[in-house]
Length: 459
Picture 1: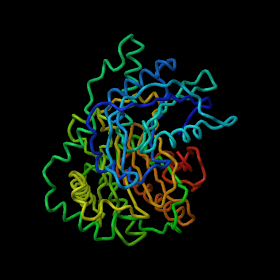
Picture 2: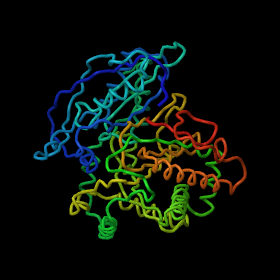
Picture 3: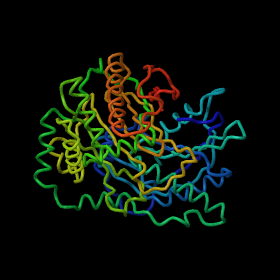
Picture 4: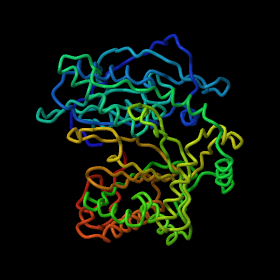
C-alpha cells in the first residue's frame, strides 16, 4: 500500500440492534467466522479523495454508503463457543466522531492502519468495518481514504463498489444533494444467501466430483517444497508486473486464435510449469463468483466461494474445460454437498489461485484516484496467487510462507510462469513485457523496479 506521510484519522462508530429477524450467514461466512476472532482477517481499499473535502463530508458520505448496503449493517453473533448458532444480526450504525489512533513519532501510516484494522475489522467486531483518512504532511498531496472491512462482508468486487459509491455520495454532497441520490438501490447480500439456499439440490455429477476431490487428500496443496510448515510462517508477498496493455492485447489475440480466453492460457502455463518442475499437473483452489445476475452487480457482500480446478493436460482447450468444470462445482450451495465431510477442510500448505479482470467488471472506477486493493499481513502455511488484469496490464501477486525453501521453490516457479506468459504473448508482433521479460531476483526489494518483478514483505 502506497500512502503519503501524514496523520491517520479514524471515523469511529457504534451499533445498536434493530427490530428484525436474524438471518443465517452464508456457507463461506460461517467457515470464515469458525476460525474465531483474529487479526489479519480483513481487506481494504485505499484511494485519494477526488476533490478537496472536509472530514464531515467524508463521514457523511461513508454513512450513506453504509446505509445503502445491508451487509455493512449486520454483525456476526454466536458460534464462538461452539454451543450456540452463528447468526447475522441487523444493526444500526451510529457515528461517534473522528479520532486519532495512537502512533509513534514519525510512524509509518501503514503500521497505524494495520493496527486499527486488525482490531476493528475482525469477524465478531461491532461493526466489523472502519473508515480512515490519511491527511498528508505535504499540502500538495491529496488525502487518502482507506476503508477496511472484515472479509466476511466483502469480496474484491465489493471494494470497487464501495469506492464508486463513496465517490458518488461525496459528489452529491458537493452539489448540495442528499448523498446517494445518483445511485440506484442495491440488493442486500443476505437475499443472495437465501436465494442460494432455496435453489434445487446440486446434480449428482457435482456431488460426485466433490467426493473425488476430497478423496484425493482434501483441498489442493502447493506441489513444490515449502520447507518446515509445522507452524504458520510470516508471509512473503511478491508482485510481478508481467505484461503491459499491448502485451495483454497480444495474449488475448493468442487465446482467441485457439478458441479460448486468456485465463485458459494462464492455467495452461501453470500446468506446463508444474509438469516440468514437479511431475504433476495443476491442482488448486479456484475462487469463483456468484454475481451471475446483474441484480447483484452493485451489491456489497462475499459473492465468492471456493472451488477446485484440476488440469493434467497443458493444452489450453483442456484447461478451458477445467475452468468451466471448476465454475460448475462452485455454482451450487456447498453446505449440503460438503456436510457429510465435515465442511470444507482447512488443509496445511493449501494452494489457491484467483483471476480478476477489472476490465470486464461492470463497475466504473476513476483510476485517477489511484485505487489500491490492500490485504492484511498474516502468517501463512499456504500459497495464494492472484492474477489481476487492468488498464495497466497483467500483474501476478503471490503470497507464501517465509522459509528458505519456499523462497527458492515458489520464487523460481514464479520466474518460469511469468516468463512463459511473456513468451506466449510474443506469438504476435509488438512489445509485450513490462520492462523486459527477465531480471535479477531480489525477494527483499520493496519498491517497483525496472524489471517485471518486485517483492514486498507486507501489504
